Image (cartoon, rainbow, N blue to C red; front, side, top):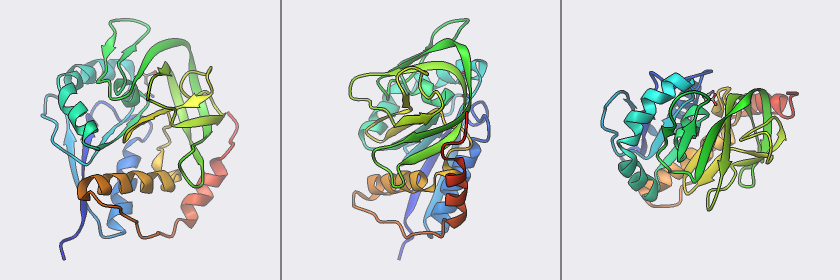
Length: 242
Ligand code: GLN
């Protein structure tokens, strides 16, 4: 019997890979392979044409890297919108998250175009938010997500785009409206570095399931893994002081 698989497009890892965001790819790859699911991985850099994938990942980066990436990404906005509307899963972390919205206005320099997969926009704030974050989702069990934030961008979400989670500790989207991250269809953005998925295995499996269901157009239930260690790490981080 043919092995099931997911195809994963890693967007601009040469520029956007801050604070160990590659750990998210490693987690997705391991959690697929431990279940015998093929993990077809491709990096997209520079002016590469973005291929059709089940899952796209874009990590965080400093303003200057975001300037370069936004130019390449924006040229393929229509294709990415088509992929979103076909159910592809997107996970954007921090700087990558900001570019999944309409724009990012850094402190200095021009406004960076985003690809508007999320109804959100970001403007640079005076203060840098650096510290541990715990937030509660309404769709995961356990409900908590933990991670580490380091950004000055303030993100505001609108319309049908909803918060990914509600803060327990930390500043999240903007330090004002108590929200962290954003989601619309199968597009997810978050400020949580760490990297995010090793300590949030339930979110990793949630995303893998969405990507498989998109590819096979059927309900998928993943075999459970022994996540004792992962949840010890998760619980140790829940509520960690800022
Ligand atoms: N440069 C962006 C900001 O400071 C994103 C930073 C990041 O990806 N950690 O908000």
